[in-house]
Image 1 (cartoon, helix red, strand yellow):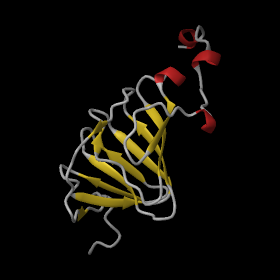
Image 2 (cartoon, one colour):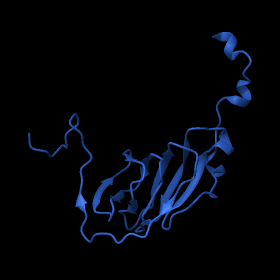
Image 3 (cartoon, rainbow, N blue to C red):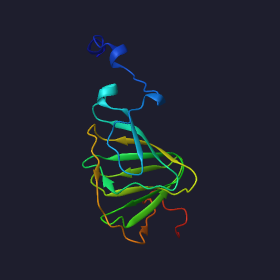
Image 4 (cartoon, rainbow, N blue to C red):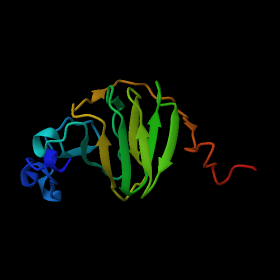
Length: 161
C-alpha cells in the first residue's frame, strides 16, 4: 500500500485551506440570503462535496427553493434559524448556534432569520458540486405546524414519559 501512495504529490493533492476572505460569491443566489462558496471542484478539487457560508440578515427570509437531488446540511454558527418546508411551507422548526439542519433532496424550504436584530450566520455543506438552486413560487400556509426534530433514541426533552 505504501508504494501506491509514493507517487502522489501530496503538496499539490493534499489539504487545501480556503481563507475567510477568499470565499466565492459568484454562486447561485436566492432572494433574502447571501451564499459564498468555499469548497468546490474549481477551488480545491473536491468531487463529491460543496461547502460554503450563508448569511441571512436580521428580520429577513429567503424565497422558497430546493436543491434538486442534493442533500444539504446547515450548521448554525450564530443567530436563530426558523426553517419552513413542505409543498406550501406548512411545517416549521427552529435551530440555534451549534445545531445542525438536514434538508433532503427536492424538499421545498425557506430559511428565516428569527431575530429582528442579529444576522443569522451558517455553514452549508451539500452532497454534490452542481450549484442547483430551484427558486419556487409558493403560496405559504398562514399557520405552519411546528415539528420537533427528534428520533426514537433521542426523545424531545419535554415529552411525557
